[in-house]
Length: 116
Image 1 (spheres, rainbow, N blue to C red):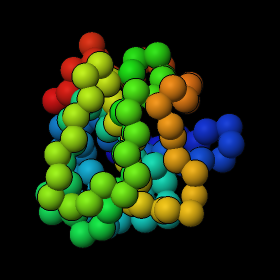
Image 2 (cartoon, rainbow, N blue to C red; image 1 turned 90 degrees about the vertical axis):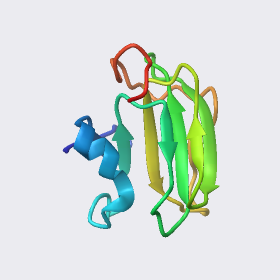
Image 3 (tube, rainbow, N blue to C red; image 1 turned 60 degrees about the vertical axis):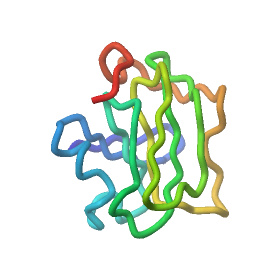
Image 4 (tube, helix red, strand yellow; image 1 turned 120 degrees about the vertical axis):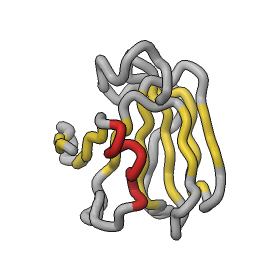
């Protein structure tokens, strides 16, 4: 997994390998410092095996947020048609999160908008 930092100081962990995307936030060491996990390509996620709620945002290839969910509880599935990647973090109710229509400036995120 790689890392990146946004202009506002937000830290991202990039999961682009099959193994990295499959394990995601199930590994407590991933994003332990509050980073946002970027799963690419990814249009479908699940929270089976998670111990805490997640904040989720699905993003298209142009970097526009298509769908956003706060506090998705364990044992759920979620998908978004047209998403190229998914942003995840452990739920932080007091901090802002992405809203549909936000342009987050991610480009070339995923391949063909298809989840794997």
